[in-house]
Amino acid sequence: MRFFILTIALFVINDYQGKISDAAYTFGNLNVILKVPDGISTVENPHRAEFNKLLWCQANEDANTILPIDSVLYRHEKTNQTFDQTTTPPVQLHDEHRALLNFTGVPLTEILSGKYVCHINSTNDIDIHGNQFVYIRPFFHFNDIEAKLSHDDEPFNVIGTTLSTNKGNTVTFPCPAAGGPNLTVTWERNNGLPEKHQRNGFDLIIPDVDESDEGEYRCIATATVKNETKSPEYVLEATLTHYLKKVTSYIFDEESGLSDDATQTEDANNNNSEVI
Ligand SMILES: *[C@@H]1O[C@H](CO)[C@@H](O)[C@H](O)[C@H]1NC(C)=O
Ligand SMILES: *[C@@H]1O[C@H](CO)[C@@H](O)[C@H](O)[C@H]1NC(C)=O
Ligand SMILES: *[C@@H]1O[C@H](CO)[C@@H](O)[C@H](O)[C@H]1NC(C)=O
Ligand SMILES: *[C@@H]1O[C@H](CO)[C@@H](O)[C@H](O)[C@H]1NC(C)=O
Ligand SMILES: *[C@@H]1O[C@H](CO)[C@@H](O)[C@H](O)[C@H]1NC(C)=O
Ligand SMILES: *[C@@H]1O[C@H](CO)[C@@H](O)[C@H](O)[C@H]1NC(C)=O
Image (cartoon, rainbow, N blue to C red; front, side, top):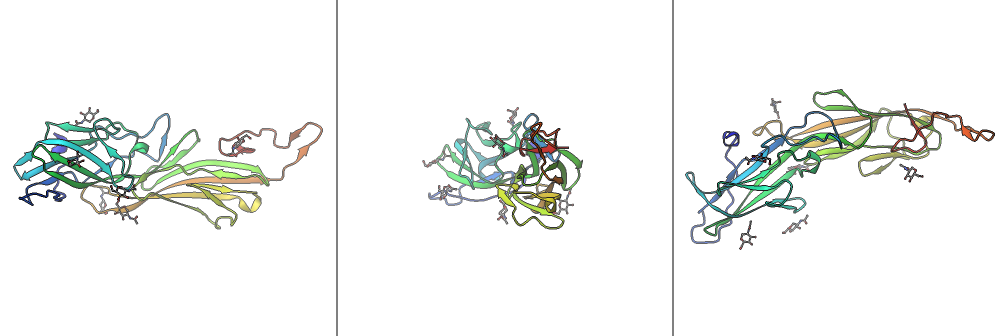
């Protein structure tokens, strides 16, 4: 089986509080690197974990003896969320000797990255645990934005919206970053961000815009990842670029009740902004 071939040595943590203190140890794959096909995931077509992407662990008494499992629980360390046979992703038992946390088909945005602890109680009452890791490189998950990939190598580089708007309006640039662990978002503009900018989570808000706010706004998402199971951790970026193209003065025609901006459309994120 494929996951047997991927096996590498890993953690030895023994919680057994009995006569034989080194009676058993956990054994499994140290980490799983979930593949991200490109920089844009959408609600309609989310990036999902590939077939048989999983963490697995077992309780070994020695190199040749695997203890039968009585119960198993996976816990995500940072959130304390626990996983068992009923959760998504589910814990599955293979031949009563091996526990799998099986990510097959689960949308990547629903998968917690970082450290997991596999807790096993064997049928002979040995209680042990071991640490394992999930890595997902950063990408962007959109609801309905018209984003484009500019190119699809390292790092991901996604082109977001181009806006023109009227002076005085508020512009919100979304940054729906996903991946991890250690997902962070920073915003940049060539000539610096306007001082009045605000953050709402990962999103950038520019209130009361004027001409000086025009420019190229880049959201840079970073996460700690691995490219291969045995290679060291490193930080990888993904960039989402939005443009504030033209800020114009608002002219209201009292006769017609129309503004000069006849083709004004409503963008999901920017009332009174035109998507061009
Ligand atoms: C993982 O889950 C998928 C989908 O439920 C299943 O087809 C596959 O056999 C499971 N993998 C293992 C190793 O049990
Ligand atoms: C293993 O047994 C201990 C003691 O009975 C219990 O506290 C723990 O929750 C059990 N672990 C699992 C994974 O069922
Ligand atoms: C998780 O649980 C442990 C003990 O079970 C506790 O010490 C820790 O504060 C909890 N962490 C969170 C984030 O709830
Ligand atoms: C990044 O994540 C790793 C693995 O979860 C963790 O050990 C490390 O401390 C984190 N680094 C930072 C800078 O948060
Ligand atoms: C993975 O990253 C390491 C450095 O962290 C590098 O030496 C290696 O060539 C990379 N492998 C691939 C397949 O990109
Ligand atoms: C847009 O306007 C509607 C109705 O006035 C309001 O409910 C919504 O919160 C506004 N959206 C933004 C992003 O300001």
